[in-house]
Image 1 (cartoon, one colour):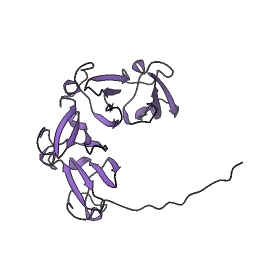
Image 2: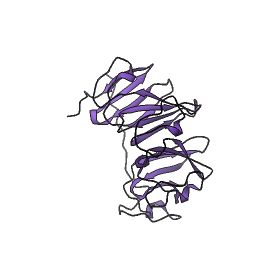
Image 3: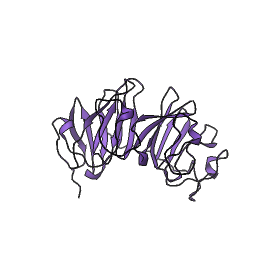
Image 4: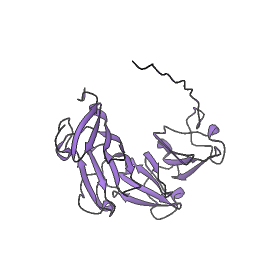
Length: 242
């Protein structure tokens, strides 16, 4: 039997004081205030934060200085094709930055996926109206219902979206068309068969690895599931909503 290897880790705070609030921009991230942050992503030594209840996306530079790159604190839906710092967001839940320096975020309560490029915000998927529809059409005309996570593939230029309330995993192709990969209605079934016929229950986060397998948290089913070659399987957990 191989020897047991243990590693020692320590925990430290890198952003926030522990006090609820929205202040601190242009100063040390350790002195700043956040309000129910739900997502964090690191790229090239910079940290991107979905500061959910502040309705902002914030960034911590390599030198530890925090700034707001999207949102105004005021909850709402506005700002497309203008400066992201003047846009209104509603409970952003996820953020991601890719090698081309574009930053994406899920504006969850507005039911859209947005992109910030050179400081300007635009919509990538969704219309701002809650619902389900639009497969086979441009993603900007599709309807989403409380998207909660996204994965942006820099190699294929495809975008994967977990739609919590529609119980689906959807994809935006490199040409901007929307499709559904997994899920139909709320429930738990389908393992070993086509993912498009499976039932999910509030999927939230997802990840695509190099061989194009997609993993996602089927949150209210208490499992991790995998999409590979169009087939869905469970890789962790026993499933069910109880």
